[in-house]
Image (cartoon, rainbow, N blue to C red; front, side, top):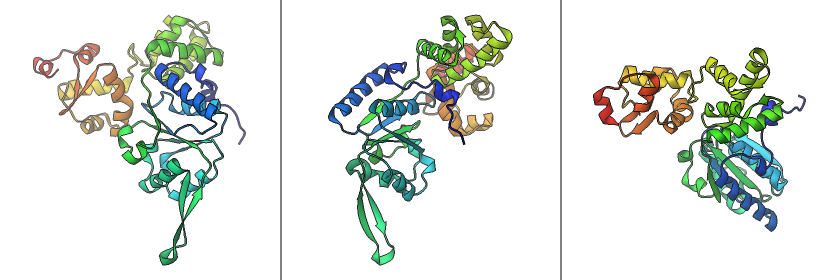
Length: 328
C-alpha cells in the first residue's frame, strides 16, 4: 500500500501556533511542552476529553511534532489483551507519545497494565504458569501517554488520577470555525470569501471536523453551480440543499425534536425511548446529537428525562401546550 496524505490529513494543523480556538487549553499546553523540552524530560501523561471531531487526535499529533518525537496510535477497543499493550509499550522509544483513542473502552485487565507503566515506567510480566509462575518487572523507556475520550465519566478513578494534565475541549464559536474554514480552504485551493467561511462556520455544530466536511461539499456546489468562489449566498443555499439549517441541525436532529414534540408532548422522555422512536442507537443519540441540541438550547436534561425547550418549538414552528410550558 502506497503512503499518501489524505485530504483530512492535509488540513490538520501540525504546530500549536496553527491551531485555532481553545485558547486556554492551547496556552497551558504550550507552557507544559516548553517546560518538558527545557527539562529534557517526557511530558506528563495527558488526557483530552470532549465531543467527537473537536481536535483530540490533532492535539496529540501536535504534541509529538512540537516535542520532536514519534507518536504511536491505537484505540481502546483494539487492545483486547494485556499482552497486546505490553508489546506496544516495550517497543516505544525514549520520549515517544502513545496515543490511545476511546481510552474508556479498554478492558479492565489491559488497563491494569498501564498503572505501573504510567507511574514507574515498568510493566509486570508473568513468566510460566501454575505454581511455578513468577512475575518479572520490565523497565520501559520514559514515554507520554495521551488518552482521548468522549465520555470522561466512564474512566475509572485509578486511571484518570494518573494523568498529570487533563483538558476539556469545548465546542468552537462560529467565528473560530470560520477561521478554520478559511485556513482549510487555502490549503485545499478553494476560493472562499470571509462571509462564506463564516456561513459554513455557523452551521458546523461547533465542530471543526464538520466544518471541513461542509467546506468540501460547498466547494463542489461552487464548482458546478457557481463561479468557483464560496460566497455567503452560495454557502447558505448549498447547505440548505444538504438539509443543514441555520443552526447546523440536520434531518436527524429535527427528527429527534419533532418526535419529542409530536409523540411525547415535548417530554419528559427517556433516552432509550427517543432512540427506539428514531431507530438509532442510544449511544449515538447521547454522544453525537444530544450534546449539540443541549448546547443550542433546544433540549434540556431533567431527572425525569429529556424535554424539548420553547426554542425547539419555535424552531419547528409548533405551538407549545400550556402544561408543557410549566415544565420549563
